[in-house]
Length: 334
Image (cartoon, rainbow, N blue to C red):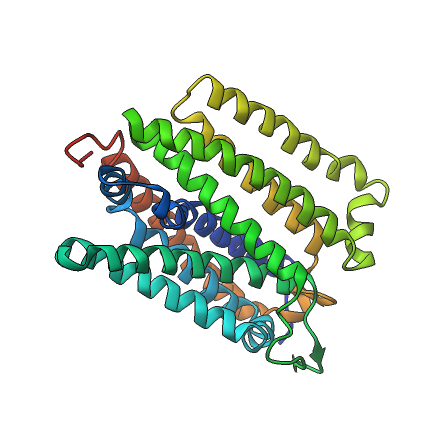
């Protein structure tokens, strides 16, 4: 049984969509955890209450992305897991710690300070592990035959550390923008100041990671600058500049919703840039989505399930966000 190019491409976009949905939806609550040490008193309680109805549902997309990769591109999954085992374990432990801390800071107020530390540490570790994993994939994974051929610490490099720190800054930006949207008063003003600082750091990080990526592989350079592709790829940095300008104007004008939407736009453009660099590879260098794809009959069967499951997830996610819309007031409730 052979892979089908059309089905393989569809599944690649579905998994990319699931990963981006996770980054968007879990990114801002991880960002709140990263920002937690900068918040004080009632600011912490309001920040926690702003994500309380949403945070665990956001991680549905992580399960969908990982499960989809395993089912639709089993060879890529088999190569990436041993290459990234320490990072995957660190990320999962971080998510467990922050989840436990989220629940127990209310149920065990006598040790709330320690639960707050665990919430911050778990958020930071999870975000850093995700960013380093992204850098490890971009810098290339050693493959021999159909298996991972690298070492236990091949993922660790200056470039992967750069991507790790960059994603932490980006998540902190999303968290600050979320608080601008969902809080008011002095807490909102504080979040606006944090958004300004992390906006600068995130934009600088986007530039540094983009330039550093081009030094990793000649294929990345050709995918960005070869004619006629450059006519389309040039739009990405131009749009980043436009959104960055609009973001600063939104902060100056004290808009509530627009900074969050524009920050999401920066993430979307960064994700598009990642796709330009990688496609058609799923594991660089050289393991393409067609090479790693499951047989067409398997992908076709799973596509039926995905066609039902993804709209359901989108529907209940949208409903949850609609029900818990609006500001978190002084009493700590929507």
